[in-house]
Image 1 (cartoon, rainbow, N blue to C red):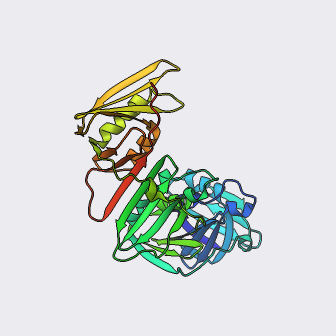
Image 2 (cartoon, rainbow, N blue to C red):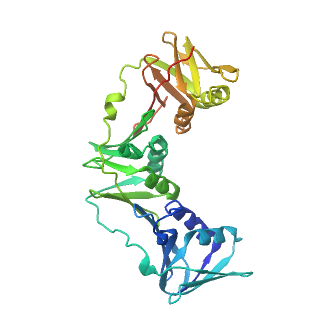
Length: 370
């Protein structure tokens, strides 16, 4: 097996695969990348058994073959090289690999390609197409709010629901909830699926431009985009009834510039309790004051933020980290926050939205300390 490839281009592709490869595994073969050369196309595959990512790369192929190469050493080698041509010479009988550049030679030992797990192939029972830019926004706006609590496996992924002429994506960790709706030409899905957060994070890092085709079976989902294919198991659990926690009576509306709000929360939160990270919102006519107090260490801070607010005065407390997370996953210049009482969830949303997409983000308040 022989081929030559530009080190920078190879490194770019390997970086995408790195998100799938387990750092430690009871199956050492999973710590390798399967490399298959056919003609001038090098196919690279990484898997942790739950998620598999396959990428193709055009190379100067000399002799076809396949081998599993230790991922970490290969990635570290390509990362440390300057922008140069790297020639790979592989003896598939002994699994010895030699990498040559203009100035150096590197040797390592791989594993037989026969030892590598078989990657699942299937034709989806359901299929829909999304613009890559739309898919990026869906993942960016939802995956951050996924739970990492293994006792609640359903919440460790993003719920995708096909409705009539729309696709919904929902995530929650019990403290925050995100619901994004994208208009579609028809019904994208005929059933609800839960896609693991890790799979979506890998997809997000790999997306470039164009369109992505999403295929679904009862157990797996496949994303096909550019020169990449990702296959992931679905989470076989029942998602919580998220609609029941979205309040419908939040009539107290605050309109504020997103960057102003993020900056103020971050500065004031430096003086908040390191346990609760609590910041206090004091709202009055066109006035928003954000304050925090650290009783243990004697710190205190407050700031006023320009805003539009016409409802009656109120106070409400939030975990500053949750608020900043939510605000940084919106791109719009202005946002609205909608409240009802100091003990009910607050809604955060863009102040202006287009006809094709909408998003709301809920954040639970925290009990105000005196």
